[in-house]
Length: 228
Image 1 (tube, rainbow, N blue to C red):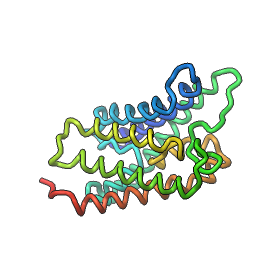
Image 2: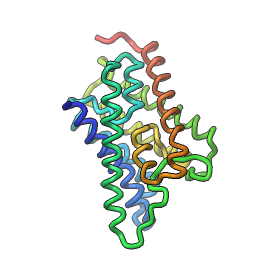
Image 3: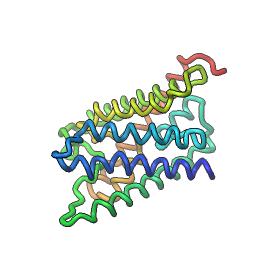
Image 4: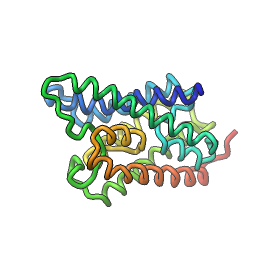
């Protein structure tokens, strides 16, 4: 239960910090945060939570990460469903807090609410195939970094930093394509508030990250040195 509570609050922080920077700060060009600021915000949520709850739950914050760690032989199958439920609920709670804050401004309009999308709902107008490839590849590389940084032979003190920087880089690459998911819990939390097209396109942001994560788990398990 302690692990699940940690995952709940960690994913809440990921959504509130990352999506919050997009909805609240990036909406004002004069603040200068832009895509780069949003990318950094997502990375910082992971870095901060890695050191806050990494020793409690492993700081997955993401169903794709939990599944990828399982595929890589680092996580028990019996813990998958409880972790995923905790992550999704945490993401929804983070999105709810963000909605309450954002809607407190006069003239508030929900808009895209930092939801993920493709086609006309892609920030750069990228189509479904581009979005699918982007999400699979970005999640694949994210899990390669996570599996490598948390390996028993890797320097443990820097794992959280490496993972957070990887997520920042992923956002710098793929925000224009899909608004960057690589995380089904993050995508679900925002889509529930936007509804309509966001729910209709949500399937891609579950399928692609999970496929990328499973592939990374199997690949890293095959190429990595033996655990000690």
